[in-house]
Image (tube, rainbow, N blue to C red; front, side, top):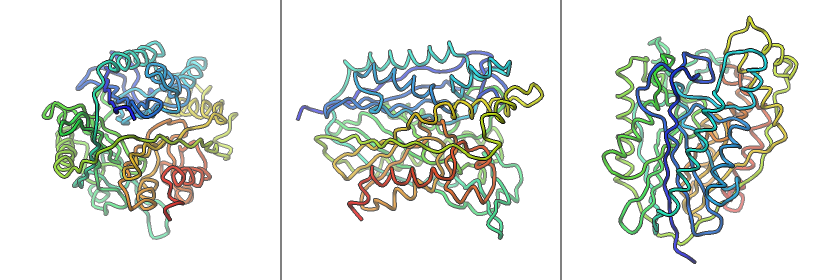
Length: 433
């Protein structure tokens, strides 16, 4: 077995003045509070190269996801199925669906993405990856650590006695009576996967499930509190850092965040504190190989009339409809166009004791918790916000409970069983039952 190597790469993906933010639904860029980055690692020495990349954007959907992933694969001399590409999901950031943008432009709608700028970002990240390969470092160990994040995450969906959503806790929740509701279902732990050459740290990959917004909509570009925590950790350690949003589709900071601007740094420091604590309890394990597994899934489209192609075309072509509604209709049409193009769900396995699961869309936290229960005998780190074509991926019961997420989710209730079956296979859960 040849020695294992790790290459790290980074590129700037900060949008220019006037560029749309969050798919054109909010104020466009009028300034930059902190830069946005595409950050990644390449694992070498055990079969095909594996690329893990995360971008400080709101989302990458459908062809925008697949184009970027293919570019990284070519740069790494691997195939797209061996690239896992994700977003952190801040909202004062670009949201990319290239097919939807073409539909919006044809309908005369509000721009959602500058396609030339998108191509530039793809090329910059691929070039950064290429340049990093000759500088790859040998790695001998992986480390795992975790720590509780205190008073950040809370479930967005607050159910009433009838089992229906009675209140929604947004990222910035003004109403005190809503903030005072219990935290609800969350995963309070931040988990860190680290790479080492002997006792020398090479890179930290952090996983935590929560919408990463303190406030947004003011046109000021920011990676927000999770990106800022990542950067603070890198500045103090001098070690490459990445941050993956876990299954945070129904989790926000709303219980602990009223949207005041000073709270961004408060939330940053709470995430940073957990990163520091996870580092202190990290346990290193010697590795001589790794395995990459993937399952191909096709998630079903919504069948309600309001999600049909004709209905979506009518909304997209309605000049009186809001930009948010028209652009969301374009996302739905782009999703329907690629519905038969599969999504790959991935797992990076270090000797059966450290499993890293990479999921699509804005998966609900239930998927992350289920994955941990399926393999409670090992470490399971989970990232979501991969191919965001389906948008939110709630469990089936959420469509009956109501609330915001099921009203805009593009995949139907049947997605739950399909995704859970893929997770079981990737985690070898049936064998370990």
